Length: 387
Ligand SMILES: Cc1ncc(COP(=O)(O)O)c(C=O)c1O
Image 1 (cartoon, rainbow, N blue to C red):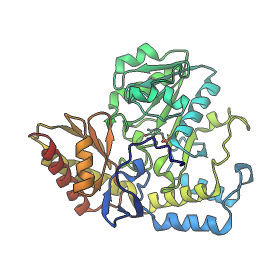
Image 2 (cartoon, rainbow, N blue to C red):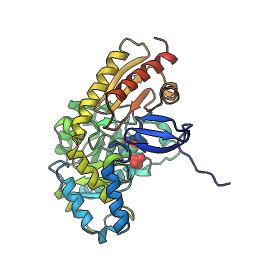
Image 3 (cartoon, rainbow, N blue to C red):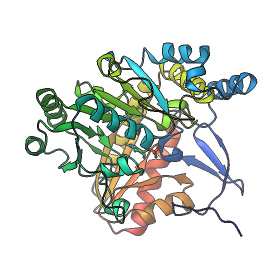
């Protein structure tokens, strides 16, 4: 009998419905969703304006190659302009984070005529061969696929001096997450990001900032790299940008776009009318519903309540993150705590790194939800790990 090839460990429940910050399984049990499909449903499940955008596409046209786009494309550009960094000159849509990373790597090599790409310990940029070649959060992801893409060089995350040893005149680009997600919710230090920017300027290489997980408001700014007061040369985003619809994007300044001729890249589904309309609606929601403001305030509340509830517990090393991208780092693997949260507290969370329970809730969570998460983690950590 045909079976589905699962690449993820099944979680033991079958979801049938999602609404705002909650999902329901086939038995009718409601869960508070702080997993959000790896951060995708940041605007909440079935946001009415995303549904409306999809309905408009269904009622008009759902297929039209990028070269045949209608007015939906201009509408998207107009909605994105106010939320993209002011250096942004051009944007293109793809379908997944990894696919957008692949394009970013291609652009860097094409534009600089150089081959080396620098990436960092603890990084995660996706599972396709190019993205995997700059991913190091888990050795298991890479094992068995060598040789990976040549010219990819690893440096230590947050090691300012180390940057000087690896970035030079042969470097096409450095790729970095402002806060490493899969790697364990690890924020880049300010010194590190500033030095990286500076060194890329000096050596003439491009800085690719991967905001697939941090971007689109999750950390309390539209783009997390804005916390550092730096600019990217290539910005990569995905997950939340279309309110739940699968889409990713690559943003470049005008001078980079000018060096990319037609035919340089392509994607059958990239920029399809459904994705474009959903990105448009999501960008409007972001601006008009104070999403970043809410993510910042609610994130601060969650982090400070977690800190006061968990402080003093030997099992907890620290609470970290920014906005609604939050990690509770344990002294042990987090599997049992995540299972306890799901099965006993009806809260969906996910793992990051080897010891972190990660919460990626939607911006619509409320004070009660936050308290539920805090109490849930505290109970579950205490249940399985000694004080
Ligand atoms: C920072 C970052 N980059 C890239 C990716 C890959 O995205 P996708 O799974 O959509 O290919 C992810 C996915 O978690 C991510 O967190």
